[in-house]
Image (cartoon, rainbow, N blue to C red):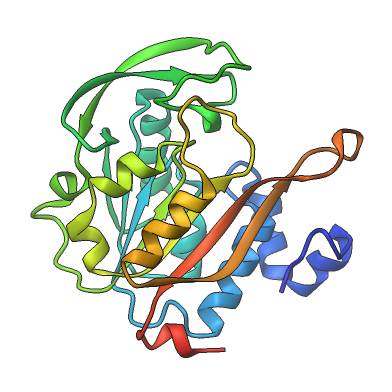
Length: 251
């Protein structure tokens, strides 16, 4: 398994040459560590039987591209509120033949409209304010419950849910009761630093999934501060698996 805090990147790259090729060909779409670990999880059977993928906070389709190469043919339903990112997201779905559908809306615990804080690096866009970073713009975007966004679209019974919503995780999870009931696994980016006001805490997210029958299965990728700033862990992609499922007992 790829562990960037223990292995030099050059050595890790040799362990997953296919992922390295994807990274070199499409650097804006591929995180080497995450894609390598997705492949490991698939090889271990963690994604066995998954018949649809829900990608919330899709940006330009980074996760959609990677998971479509790991689980080919499985439809991906991507949710992204930023109109500029959404246009590129749809283009990448068409360019790379990703099956599924894209939705230009922000998943939230209520319907309506809100201001999306758009940053220079649009991967940091959030519905929450960031005390340390003034947004480059603020864009009005529609809000909808995730259950409502996907109503009538998903006939799948075994879902993989991915969340990358910059501190807005709890609002999305509160809107996804029906989706979570159909999930076998979930990948959630959590932050260990307070980058956004009222952002979800890792403990909240862990407790939410535990109360609904999920266990923390693995860490798929990490982001650390630079060595000059201490090299401490800033973010991590956590993989949760439903207890009692076939995947939970795979090694």
